[in-house]
Amino acid sequence: MKSHDLKYDVIIAGSGLGGLLCGSILAKEGMHVCILEKSRKAGGCLQTFKRKGVVFDTGVHYFGGMDPGQTLHRYWDYFGLTKSLELERMNRDGFDIIGISDREYPMAIGFDHFVEQLLPHFPSEKENLEKYTCSLKVISAGFPLYNLELPKDHTEEKYRSQSAFDFFYALNESENPSDGIHTGRLSSVLAGNNLIYAGNRKHTPLHLPALINHSFISSAWRTVGGSAQIAEKLMEGILSNGGEIHLDEEVIGICLNEDEFEVMTKPGRCFTSKKFISGIHPAKTLKMMEPTVFRKTFFKRITNLKNTVSSFAVYIVLKDRSFPYLDHNYYYHSTDDVWNESNREGWPSGYMLHTPAPASEDGFARNMIILAAMPFKKVKKWEDTRKGNRGSEYLEFKDHFAASLLELAEQRFPGLRSAISYMEASTPLTWRDYTGIPEGSMYGIERDYQDPLITTLLPATKIPGFYFTGQNISLHGMLGVTIGAVLTCGEIIGLEYLLNNIRNT
Image (tube, rainbow, N blue to C red; front, side, top):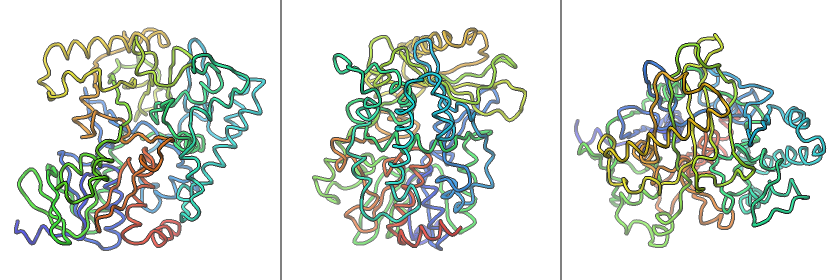
């Protein structure tokens, strides 16, 4: 291929959801788009993998707001996804079940229904339950892009600078916990799914659980057959509009030559464009560039930002007709202190259990994922190793913690281990090597309500034509990354113009 064939209107590094959405938007606008992906498959965390013929999702387990008229549905209509995906609505009476010690509590779809389902468990807490659902509505209304509106008065900033933990704590005002550990059962239940935003007692801002839970309570969904179908549909649209997607083309260097970006890849090719969007973790992106391109203060700020916790997961293929399909997720906590479980002695003390939506309807699950937060420090001694070459001690580590996680899960699901046909585990190292995110962070940069400006990354940089996208912009998750991609492309083609196009789809 001649060098002039590698010149584009915009180059996008990474084919995760953010990169594919940006590619879709800009290709629709007639721009010659090139997406560079390091792996042999596009999709990032949308990818699936098979074990014993059974499909597993890697990073997408469920998402919300997909009823007509709801936020994600309105955005995804523009991308042609709403009518082309095979989805399954989760249990209306409890899309998430929160287990604490020996009791269980449903998180239901629909705001009135949410209160109705929890009220029998908290008969004297109707006022607080209604206060909670009302607060989610008020907060989500304060984020213009959540409602496909143009940002105007920055009312959302006050929620970025409030503590999520304090918000939940206030729902048990009569409680007076000792040693700063909150033991109120209602707030523990309402925060019981905080693994989906890596809830941290000391740092998590209020807007994260508010927007995420508002979306799920609006409606909750799973993909049938895996989330790779989302990537496939987006790729079809990009290619049909003249875009290119290059696999096995890992970006290793980014140079700015006057007003043009030269993007070098591992196979030795150079792609050029006047606009560059990185869907790669910002700290990793900056390390690919000359340190003089950005100001020292910006470089230092980005590379020093903390990331959210990583995870340990067990992927299970189940014996035929041995375990019922669960049309909800199950979150378990051994105590009322549902925050920061990953740093406790005696790991694990909590987990999320998920059975992916089966293609058949016989009422049985084909497979299962059990996920628990795990800090990178537990695997740090092997950080300089790579998959398949980490030694026997590492394999023993995986076996030990997989057994511990299964033992805890079997307390709630007796006979689980006897239903297993095949099993393998992943650690923070697995996730780091798969995603390229430092320390295998689940959700990238950790937002901090005490430093919202420092830990919030804008899509446009001080370098003309250089942008970020992905989970580090706006929010993580399907909805958050979608809004982030719209923000990024809005910097290129105009946000008001783009939002009008999306609303008028």
